[in-house]
Amino acid sequence: MIMGFYTEEQIKKARSIDLMTYLRTCDPTELIHVSGNTYCTRTHFT
Image (cartoon, rainbow, N blue to C red; front, side, top):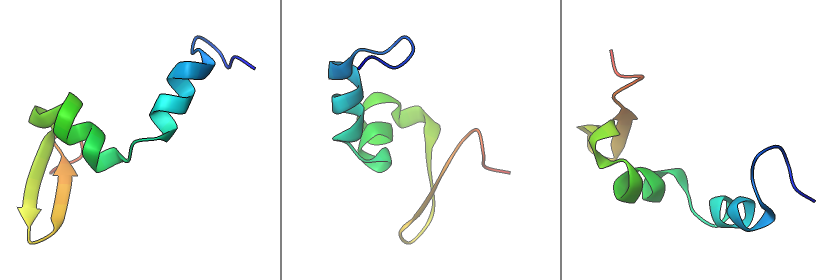
């Protein structure tokens, strides 16, 4: 089953990675270390 504009392969790949890993590898400039083990995205950091 294909959902919208994504292939089944793309959906499987997206489900196999957690958000922190995604941000660290695909969009590291979006990830902000707040303190300790707490991170935020630039988009949501205020």
